[in-house]
Image (cartoon, rainbow, N blue to C red):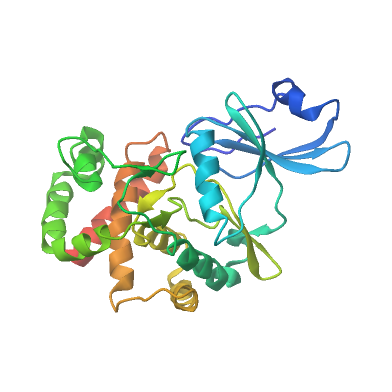
Length: 291
């Protein structure tokens, strides 16, 4: 089976012996690798005709992810975990096409994003399996962007001029950062078109919750904008408003300010050098736009 390039972690090969207890004598009649750059996901069709998704973990905690999905289930459709073992989970299969294949359904995806923001917490941080929140700790009291800018590999990719310009932009936008930082909503953390399933024009599933946390919905908005052609950004705005989200006039700028941290984090990952060059160029464009 051909494996795609540019991954955070190498994909893991399917071994039916790993889930023999779940299979209970059934045979996998088809095994298809699903998109994903972190954990490895396979769509399974078994000999009894039932379909599931097998998730082989390279990162993330299955119990925590399952608990977050139970929270999300109150507002958006998500898979149900039906079995779990060491390093793997089995989920129900959800019918649908990837949003990346049907970008005309962006409005529906943005509506789902708005509904997620209705689930709120008392503070920002990592949602734990018991529903409590562990505050973020990026070291030395730093915010995430500042912690990334201290990384030598980030500064090497950006160049010192760009790296030094970002804190000045952040200082100027301190009021905006404080405002969005006061939001404690359920954030998917990787709300991009390969994690959103659409069936008959509506969102049928939101998958891959390993980056979920409590924080600002502008992180998810920025992620969706990043993966959407500019001429379709108005679809996102329409969907967010239809989903009940109140957007200020500078909503897109806020999303791009928050999304900057994602580009910086990419520069520390195992993604390809070509991808990192694209990220560094986008950060330089950001600096030119907002300095």
